[in-house]
Image (cartoon, rainbow, N blue to C red):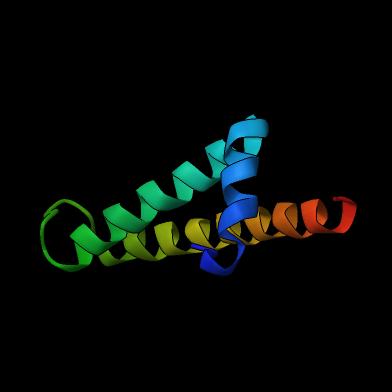
Length: 74
């Protein structure tokens, strides 16, 4: 996620606990969604997958806003 901002992401993950939490939760959801869509997780229904996708997108938007804020102030 955000390969074009790799240096900022690395900095924020070490300096901002909230960013790190958001970033890690996004990545965890990404992995869960992939496994569910590949059939690796039987107990997740399509409605739950859609809910996870919406949460993942919200987390991505939040992380992006923090990256843009960092760029603006540094």
